[in-house]
Image 1 (cartoon, rainbow, N blue to C red):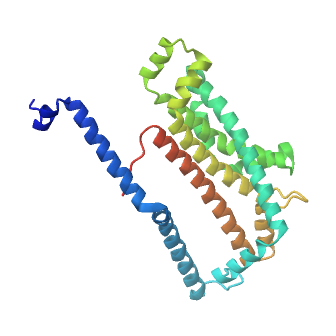
Image 2 (spheres, rainbow, N blue to C red):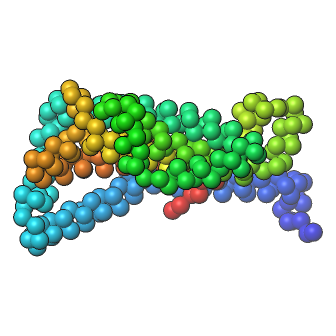
Image 3 (cartoon, rainbow, N blue to C red):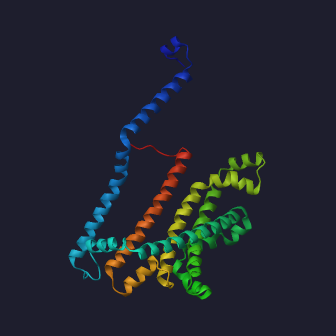
Length: 298
């Protein structure tokens, strides 16, 4: 293979020249990123959200102006946002959000623990997988609301009934995410772990769990969606005295035909769900960067 004349004159190896060229390209790419600036990156992430929000508000107002329902049944955005602004100044609103988020965090944490244990056992013990593998998928597809009659019989109208259904709603998705991650762990990694003397728990900790993180993270995200839905259904059905919650506010707004209050609470629930989804998205991006899978877009 012919070597560049300048390379021959300088006496440098072709690999050194290539390394310098690649380093120069990397420097140009970093310079372009710096030139873009923080403000432009923030705006590039915000403008699609702002555009979608404006579009939703316009459609919402258009439906109200069409007069398909009276305004006391389906309030407009101005009335609803005014009600929401008023609630932001009330202590009871923050207490309700705090109670709901506490239940969500506790239930989801317990679901992660259950999903990890079940997923780890089923993925590595073949007879157990043949016995209950399909059952886990069946539990995942079962509507959470169907568990509440049993939960109320077992625990009564208590917070334990809500937590029970949240766990049953989220744990199967988390377990399936871990099982899928273990199934797609490259065999060469397992052989390398065995060669290094790793067995059972140490093999899981240092090889299998890191390799299955992408699928496990996807299972966590799906599990959170099921947990959040289960929690909202539970708070609508199980009203506990002296414990205000977002589900309780939905219940009483429906009973009192308070359309602005109902829609305002639904907006809060939606915003919390979007916020948690953004956290999962940030975790996924961090994992992609660590694995070198993050794509640079202009």
